[in-house]
Image (cartoon, rainbow, N blue to C red):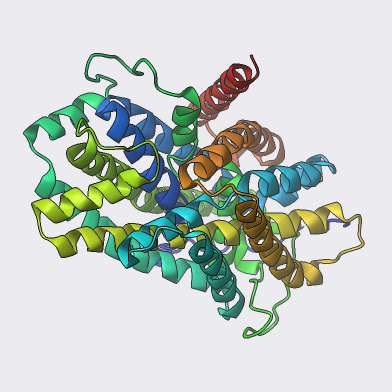
Length: 463
């Protein structure tokens, strides 16, 4: 499609912090069910807490990555994908490919089904996974305003899940466990520094990529910024349900503002407030959750001689929690983690459907128009659900394998989009709105880290 130029409009006044809460809950929810609930606790179960430094580095890098993604949407009121398409017309094809392939593996939904199956007492959870996938499609299809549906769901799940994990970890962890966590934060493990012998690099890379959202999902933050009405996003429309919502005009092309002293001062207020919001909700809440879930896993399953080579380590955790506290507490833990995983899979489908539908419109060469984005979103959503069901029918049913496969693929896509986002902001924004030197340095570090790990993992698999 032919993108409209960025018209100049009035820059909205900065909102107070309490009115900005929302988008970071969604991006946090994208990470809770993969890195936080599955991968980092799995590594802690097998290798102790000496590897937890990687989680802290991973989520810190993602904080700065997400803020650069927010920066572009805040200034121009459009997603970074539109910004990329303004630079290189073929980039939408890359984002279609690099979003669909890594995320058709329904590992998060399969993990959720496995835990719900453990509560209900049946092992064959393939059918339950399919039911959960269809249920997610129905929830996203029936909510009148899509953004509010996803935001409200994640707020509820996080409000219940995080305090519950905190209480369980405080209750079950002894002084030795807390000491191991503190040492692990600086890379000191039990008989190793940074990485233990025998740790699968692919699993560590997967966990590093999923310390937060992961893959192209970080880029979806620009959609949520826009639909929440941050900055120039005030002038953008929202995606509504084709069944229950009223149709809104959604323009992919955004608008910007004059870079006069008054607007720059207002931008700085916005920038300060959105940084605080993202720090408190995404980085602080996310970091505490990762650390406590890893601590809980370590305290209940490490060095116990139990089989924890797959997602069963969560079931082992629940068994120990039930033995040490009360049986219903183990069941409660399984339900909370299962619901968290379900919420994550729902949010993943929302984010990937947004990414795919927008890039399909951008790549269509004018054959599809902005008015088609709502229908395209729901077609893509159900195609992904169908693809996930096909993957399950083909026999790829082990949740941890599915999650690790997706995460390794997504680490490479992060390597690409970190470089593209930095390039976009450095070349598209006015001088006073560009990232500072130290933020550039952090983005370059993330680019090199994800790139280096990805190349190592690919070479290790091939040779």
